[in-house]
Amino acid sequence: MSFWFTVLRQVGRNLRQTWMSQIMTLLTVSLSVLIFSLFYLIYTNMLTVGDQLGDDLRLIVYLEEQPVPEMQEQLRRKITAFDDVEEIKFISPEEAYEKFANQLGNDRDVLEDMPRDFLPPSIEVTPLKTLRSLNQIKLFSDYLAKLPGTLKVQYGQDWMERFFNFTRLLSIVVLLSGSLLILTTVFMVAYTIRLTIFGRHDELELLKLVGATNAYIRTPFLLEGLFQGLLGSMFGLAMLYMLFRWITERFAGPGFLSMIQFTFFPPVTIATIIVISVLLCTVGSHTSMQKYIKV
Amino acid sequence: MVELIKVSKRYPPDVTALSSVSLSVDRGEMFFIIGRSGAGKTTILKLISSMEPPTSGLVEISGQTIHRLKGGKLAKLRQKIGVAYQDFKLLTDRTAAENIAISMEVSYKKPQIIRNRVRSLLEQLDLADKHDTITGELSRGEQQRVTLARAVANSPTMVLVDEPTGNLDADTTERVVKLLQNSHKSGATVIIATHDESIYRNTSCRIMELRQGAIHSIVRGDQA
Image (cartoon, rainbow over all chains, first blue to last red; front, side):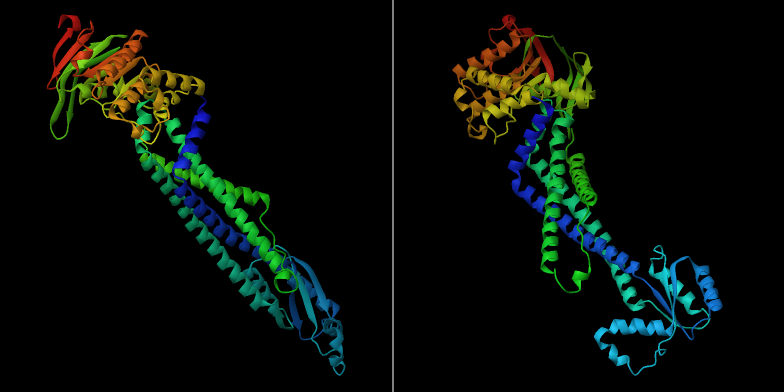
């Protein structure tokens, strides 16, 4: 009889004998993976949204008066002295008027009585993609505000601050939930294996006396932990995927959520979550064995 | 094969089970240990099967000090020793066949060989109809025979038996003795602890009598 055949038979026997606690552990592992993955999925999608927002990020520097070409060159030099930028565009009051009128669309007639130069001239600065953190953007904005002839600088700071704070809060939630759920998973698996060990105390004692090796006694328990991790994480991820599909289909169509491109985990992340779950459950199982099976 | 050199065993708080026992059992010998309850018979078997370490002295099997063996080496040695415990150590939620098979499974015998061996042993011990019976539902005598079958199943080089006929009638005792003799004939060293005179009365084997943890006498059965 081969080693693996014997070990798998032992695993099957254990699962049959302790199926109730095995199912409870499986559900705990699944729920842990589901909760953690849900937060992580939201977090990664928020990061994607942040990237999308960053792509559209423009700092508008309103000026007191339209700069002459020499002044434009001087301002360009001063701006790039802080950091390289993607693009610097000078917008005259007339161009600003046209842009505004276009944005108004059918309501552009409200501007009929207004002079074409009633809007201030401005500079539209598109920062480099590397300028992503809120602090960097703030620093850049403060720098631009000190340029000669600047009235004020706008980049939707209130909205961006709220968004970045939310992303930061979410990253803390992901870290905390991850740590807590890791502990829960390891504890639950260790506890189930401990119950199995206690339940099979007489058998383990006998196995030792008839000459079973360490590997013969311990491998089934390690495999149990491994199966718990594998099945639990796959089940948890499957539930998350169904939830994801339901949300994306339910909220498809016009609305705020339709502006955001939600994506599920790429295969590498799925594989990583499964591998980590398997490792954690095997560690839980190993801990119990080291503590309660003295061969 | 088996050497006990000045072996003592004390249990807390202050119970002396064996006191400076020296003994040598040859390979392939059938050896009886007799004595009253509490004389130290079971303790000697526990020391030889490495269930317990001696308080002092050495227990050697084939030149190896067994209480110093660990891990794989100890497991290998235990696979070669079949023990029929006085308290049976049966898995009462498993069938008789499963209990007997355990000792062969740990040495990875083929399933077909295990099945055949289990059937053969059950027939020899008049338990063929109990193949699929849960051992918890068997009588004490039947459980005792299953224990014995498990001890000899893996064709060990040494068989240790503790009170093998304690719960048996004369007819079944004869079957048990025959099984042990077969094991002996096939080359195994057999050590039997008993106070049932009927199983050693007419043998030419050595018989050691223990009294209060010390050797009182070692004589041949036909000289007693």
